[in-house]
Image (cartoon, rainbow, N blue to C red; front, side):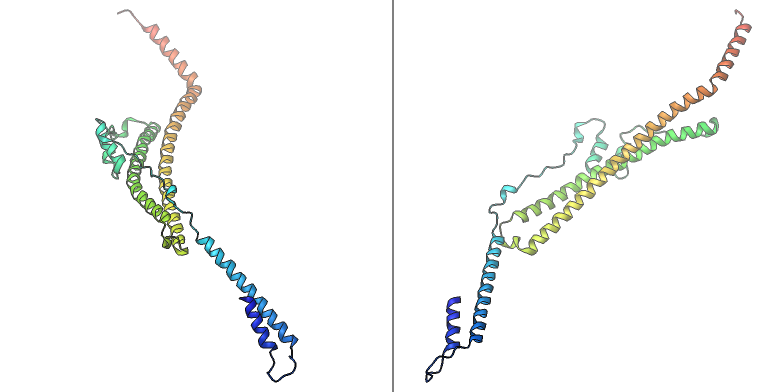
Length: 256
């Protein structure tokens, strides 16, 4: 086709009137015509290359079902299997926002009485030990509730992931156009961020459990160290008082 166009243009340019004796060739016009033909040919080749590229981009992988993978359901507890822990086990499945199920399965913590029997230092030590139990309770209640609602939320998230998988593997051409592909990428990123948020919430509660346990261990170790320090500091005085008391008791003891 390009050759036919070039030949036609040459004929038009060099054709002379019928009454002329000699054909007149304008070299400038001829050169310009050749350049136009060359540009047209290059443009045609570029269009053909673009067309082939578009064809390759539109070529699908074929059957995408081989990438379909079954989902793994989040397991749950069977409350009916256990005799006395049923309330909180059920709360771990569906949530326990007020801690009602937790309190139904734990030993109650008695409220402290009047502080008149304890010195100031002893009272503060007791309050800190009492606080360890309170911290463990609130961390366990929040962590158990978070696990329960995560199990419920996981079902919704799983359905969304399966819907996205169906759209990705759909062989229809409308699902593989540029806008549709961008929409699926955005949906996948959104689902990924939701999963990250859920995982971070569970990790934060796991960290709280470790912090509560660490505080309890630290307080126990501090109590042991303090006892040792008091022994070193007041041991001689206490031993001397003990010896003096024993001596007095032996001197004053009489057989009944």
